Length: 347
Image (cartoon, rainbow, N blue to C red):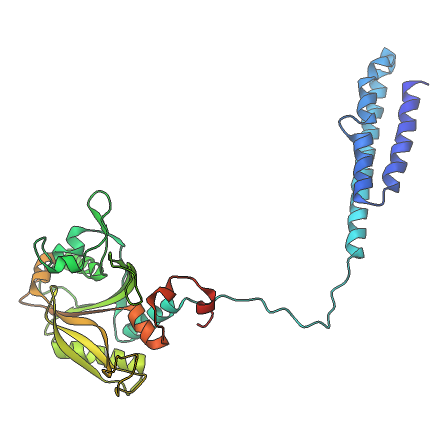
């Protein structure tokens, strides 16, 4: 039988095989048999040399036409079988109740931080953030903690390469903001007032237990202007406490020591669980420590170039975890970092 007659017979056979395929597997088998690398069409193309020289061009054109026609037929059969498979799937039952997709929520620490920052923003403060990797000057020296100061051990942190460290408090942001102000306006009479809060993560090499962690969140505040007094500090923090814990909360300030403030105080709030009567949460004292505060030490102003004779200021800071534990009744600081969904789903 002449080669072209064999080709036409193969074409009819291939068309029947492709048209008769009723599943993806059967269709793929037909494709491999006729259009594959070792298929019959490929074999005929290799035999084109058997055709007389004056017929080779026509034979080649015909083989290409057959190949194109079979490929088009195969594509149509593939669509047909795919549509058939879709139609064979069971239709969804519209009477079934909808499936509720679980949604995540904001982490309780983030909720607390955003709430606190929002309160201070309403009091006229601006939220500023800074790097967690710091240098010794911004973390210690500018905050009136020289290398030989005993308090520097209490604020110890993690050392990195090239004299870099992880910040042990967000007071570093206050230093950077004051430097920025001095760079723009000078530290003299023309400098505008500063009023910022700086939330963020801090690090100290503490042993991890129910109330301590090597990484924790802080929010610190700074206000610098002419004639700022301790009364202003107490007024601002009193408004913050009432906004956070309710109008009935009481505050008190106990003398304390911080190297970057003078005078310094610890701020306590009356226990919201017992109303100040004494309970397990407040250790029967009726008061819970919120954080430290005080008037900015003049040495800090000297370190950043602000005229201590023209300006005064106050600063404060407290741990987000500590306040969140107090507000939410959480008994272990490690709950916030364990990523236990049973705990997180409560918020």
